[in-house]
Length: 330
Image (cartoon, one colour):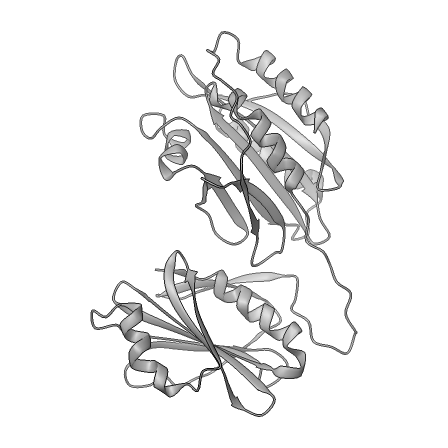
């Protein structure tokens, strides 16, 4: 993206001054991230990790790199890329951008004039800035704001000292890879998950969900520490989560003890909140599909069961699956 590269160089010339130079970071293999709650896509270096959550992805080589940008007295030098979804909630794009500028000013940042750059097939507003980290070193960064249908998308690129200049080619590649979510038009009489997302918060986990799901009162079993359920427009389309003691067992042992209860058609493993989890597909009755997940953390088993109308799996299953992917266990 020539425009971004030229503008980033201008930032460096304007702010860096006599900062020492290091070799540019090469753009290598990239992984693709698709946000489980909002659907945007972006690529990031294969050796980096996502340290954020659904709706706010934070990509960096390590947590120590993030720590350095938060507190220069700790961590290691490097670069961080954050992609965050900001709902309009009655605000205009200009008001959201101004709020970001106000927050930068509160951090005593030097802000350069706005620029208009292409991001995700649209024209984005770019805000370059510099924050004095120590007497000799600054944090350099820029924020790209992209307007979506239901929310603003905030892409922030930061580097500690000369790491910003070194990462410009990588920042450029990440920006080019960003894709806004595709809004698919459905039949008006067909249930669809709402584009407005809410966060469910319990003592055991958090989870992002569409706000047109209905909470169902459930009675937890005697062994359970917790139980909850949410339902779509059909009684057979729901997500049920219960939490109970693991009794020092690993997730493999827990699954071994429970798998006989399910006439599994398929099984597999995924990660939920960076923890290994086992899953199994089964059918409790005709025309109903189900999937159960088992994950263990802090000596607690979190069991997640999703049910869906088999003939409309393409509507219900992805909705519940994305909710599972958004879970953060406490």
